[in-house]
Image 1 (cartoon, rainbow, N blue to C red):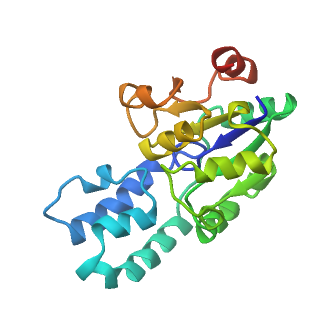
Image 2 (image 1 turned 180 degrees about the vertical axis):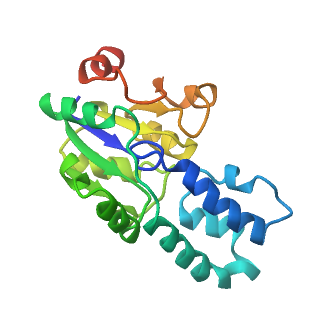
Length: 212
């Protein structure tokens, strides 16, 4: 195990419930005919959401929604998933490189750094949407992260919660840990090697014994 690659929302931070609130308000405003749409779009990138649900006549609303989203993210709370900081310390102690591999953009990450000043120190690399040519579920982002560390896919472990993210890790040929923070254990099991509710009790040794 040479590298541990983490998605951000629902994997490092318990932020998914907050995004459900934001997108719930926007979906009710623009798509009242589609109740529960905020749950369907979980795990999609902003571009994917715009392309599918806010294109055509709604394309002119995209800058307005983006402005609202940026303001919302600036006041969000960024609480670590239980046990995350302990696991990161254990991985580093065992020589594992760590990276965030997120579809979030730089403005969003600035909000994260403001809320969690020590965040950057937890990782050897932080890759955002600006670093990738293709969005998840394409494997591009995880392959780029592995290349950053000179690691082969077989030496990497991906931590994901969304279907698109899990598919991205799978397509990259990496070991995949699914977090049941956004979707059920049953629904993510086919796309992941092991499933966890949070990081409590998860260690370098437990990951190696189950995945390698």
